[in-house]
Image 1 (cartoon, helix red, strand yellow):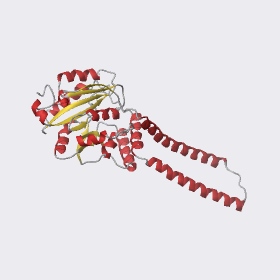
Image 2 (tube, helix red, strand yellow):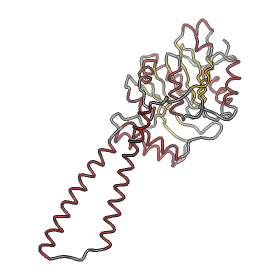
Image 3 (cartoon, helix red, strand yellow):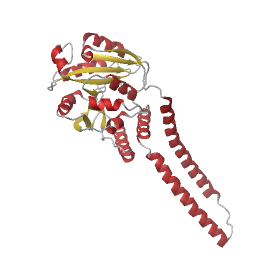
Image 4 (cartoon, helix red, strand yellow):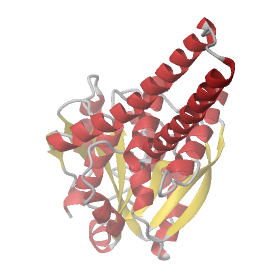
Length: 332
């Protein structure tokens, strides 16, 4: 295979013998980014110094534009591109899980199509993997492509999550990482529907190395991640990974009950000593509002967990595959 036809600087016999890495690329309405992404990845991967073959698995998460047609057109010309199309939009976490289930490489690397995960880092990741690491995390050294608010909220999420979770996740490490086949097999056994893949990647353990990179601005297209979606993802991560919020409200309830008992005794004793006092409207109103608000907040947290229990017990599949185009390299 030559570099114009594919991104693998190996002929077919060498590729069959080499260890293989699969790039998992979830896409949703990314017609403006496909060409730019493939051009950049092709340039980078033809310069890889490690003795590996690389194939690309696109996961089309129910795109409604020309994304699927563009990928199929490229796959017809290149033996290193596969396409897994889902029946509708299931979300990035489900699309990434589908990619993990269908990737055939000896190692996998989830990669965003917007090139904010720079493919130049892949060579170093593969080098650590060939040296024995099972997971190679890519940590963001700088986030020039993100706004101040997004960087600050991301930092707050990592601090909050790691303060509560039983298994912390590395700060400033997203889905962009290399995982050995052994790690992928372990992740495939995790069947929860409410998923935060970053937390699951950390939970399985294994020997881990790290590389640093500067996060650039998006190469093309527009992000689909609004602050509302990011907030929902953060809540999914917390509520699917820890029960600390429930325990916190157990402690809050105990303190409130103790405070109420003490306050009742004070009122009882003061009534016995000084007689009946005229109750104050303001203090009564404040107590009702404060305790009512805290009760509603506690019920909301319980509802988050109950909703996830409902999702889990239905046992619906995390995604539905509509079609699967397998590349020559993946089949080999």
